[in-house]
Length: 311
Ligand code: MG
Image (cartoon, rainbow, N blue to C red):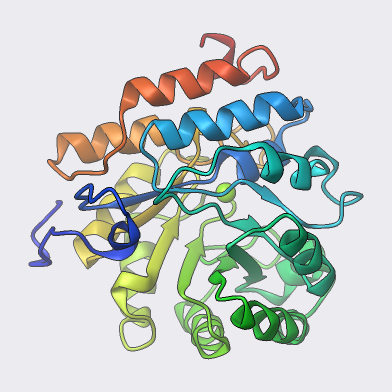
């Protein structure tokens, strides 16, 4: 499946900002510290989060999404966002984005000296309403001042589109709806667009269909895919993305995260599974599996998910 797209496998995407000149064919974006831990019931001590983030950058991950500056009342698991940002070792060449929902969140993030942020909206009105109590239009109203302010600080910006492949409230999501939101995020000034399968329902056919709708909208080197393994399809979906020329994929060490809409189901695609698949396909990531094992072991005392219990 992989590699017959004719897309060359030299370094594209975010590998280019590396100062250490590691050649990467695929950029793996580690979202465990944010997307993973915000969905875990157990709270993890700040020091363990910091050690986890540092172990992930030591493992060779070029981008580690550290935390979220959503209001602490909404995501109490990440209420220590500023403390975590202050304590991590910022490895040269590694990008450390944080989630920012609005101007107040950006102010807190700037206070923590962040240099990359992620905004999040949705492909369905039902999910936007449930997740951020706003219409899609209103999320863009919130983003405008955030992006204007971030631009004055030269801050890198990712735009997430939740439920790009299916919504827990309204069901199927059309590729044209995703494309319309992606176009608005690019016009707003996002550096990268990430299509998220928030509830893990995408099939490889869905991925092909949605990516074909993106072709005239988002330059392929600025497009990322975020899959959950809820239905066991995540790696096949990554292959479908690779076939289309996508070279940026999200994952979470240990498969952290679960799925809030499917209790007990697997969460984010596990970084170790993604790296093993890419290694097997001869695609370089710069990530060492042994380093990931060390990172997962740091959280083992605090989490009960199977991979952590055994770590
Ligand atoms: Mg996720």
